[in-house]
Length: 162
Ligand code: HEC
Image (cartoon, rainbow, N blue to C red; front, top):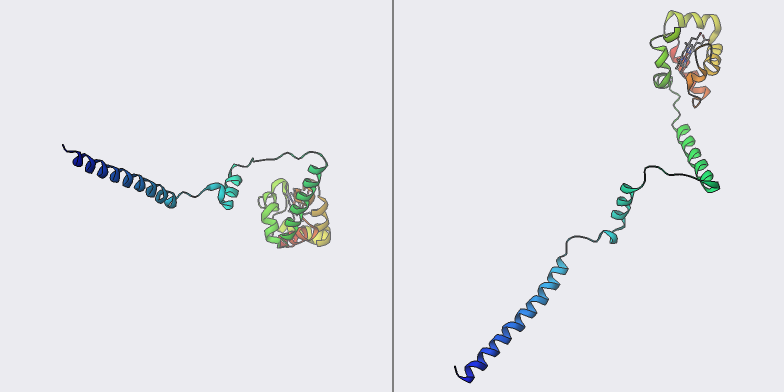
């Protein structure tokens, strides 16, 4: 092999090596720009939903700060409840009163029955409402749910009348 042939071979070889290095660099940048998996930390909504999923089920509230937070939650719950306070007698009745009154448990007067008519004649609606609010014998005050308002009880009693 002559010297010129050696030179030619070395030159060609170096061109190929440089070409390969350049190709490698190009491929690296290409791969980076194609990176499809988004960075979770960079996406606030993904991070928030992940934190939502892994957050503890319950929390403990201590001290004055905890008491304040608790009061706030209770106030929010109360206002949410009163906001949806249902004054539809049938709904109130079906939500609670029916557990005893539908089957006449412990002689609870069945709505629309003669027994209910009898009580209405004997006592009048005002007394029936008052007794439903305060309780009478086995009948617990407000049917056992102190959260029910006077209006809700009255509506339920009216629904029960024959
Ligand atoms: C735990 C069972 C129970 C539930 C729940 C219940 N009641 Fe009664 N209720 C009774 C019983 C028992 C009586 C009969 C009491 C008696 O006269 O001795 C009665 C009686 C009544 C009477 C007649 C009172 C009177 O002076 O004669 C009314 C009105 C009444 N209930 C309304 C309601 C309403 C409204 C609800 C739902 C908010 C309700 N009850 C939920 C058991 C229940």
